[in-house]
Length: 212
Image 1 (tube, rainbow, N blue to C red):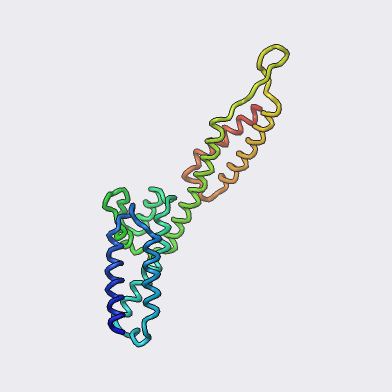
Image 2: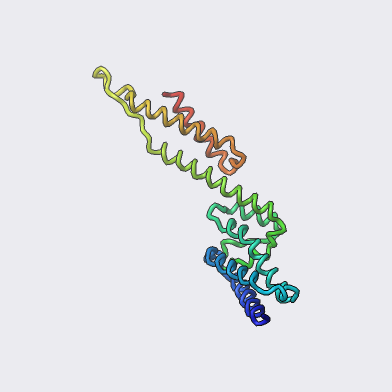
């Protein structure tokens, strides 16, 4: 039994230490998750008489701490995280995250003791996701209207001076849809980083609506 305990203990300590040296840009979180879950399963299968041993307590604590950190690390590694969110994390934890540094590693995240700030870290990550959603919607609006054109028809041999009916109806419907989308965005608590862009599009589309 002791052999099983110490073999697992050495494997866990060695692997967790190796995780710390992984470059943040190369972090393969799914693989780490599978491995840590396997360690957790093996730990649970150890005989109860080993539970009082210091090595078992250290083993279990190491696994539990990492499992508790996993969701936070995974969310921090999401592509929605921008510089402003990392700046907020720095202010929260008092740690300088040099994310753009080629030597930025997982250990630099772990050193920040994120579990001490769990609720605030989760809020920052949630904000990042919501803001990314707003950013994506604004891009949809921009990509849509940058290529739209007014279509004119000839009138009484005086040239192309009036708007085509069907095309204008479709354009008006598209305007209403975009304005509704922007209205929802303007009411979001996560709008702040994009307030000027969203307001700009509201003004532009309102002007087009009034003109039509």
